[in-house]
Length: 205
Image (cartoon, rainbow, N blue to C red; front, side, top):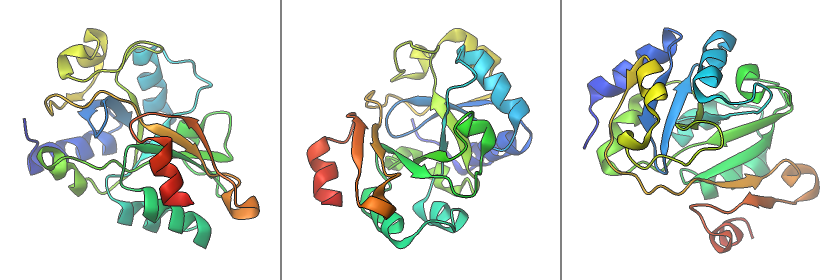
């Protein structure tokens, strides 16, 4: 099932309007809102039953937009992003500007970044020209959703917008900690998911 330019416009409008949306990505279904709106974030967290102190990722649908918005990145971080993104990874970065507080929660110095590698049928989402606070579309601690039908009913019914992108791979993103990359040249895989550790090693050396 392919998404359209109209779907992308509806998603952007939902974010601008302070709403919560269920959407397909490259790995599993997600739920999202404006990463600068604490009110929207609180509503998303309530729908998921997610503990309020737990951080969420910030997603951009293109690497170009991410690099432009995150102007504080240094050269080593930019190289790492260009080697890993877009892709099925969540990158933990030093959040020097302490941006996106509703997503970062208690740890304002860390930013979780996602730029998905979208399949062709979801490519229309690349037209969404703003970041979004993103978490998996499940009840906190529950299984990830590969299809819209697997998204809990309370999430689907509680969201302002629901987009159906068909069946997804169903494997969550690999989480890579890059917070010590600039100062010490170190990185660490915290959770192996859709991208194998061997592929991360080849990309980062």
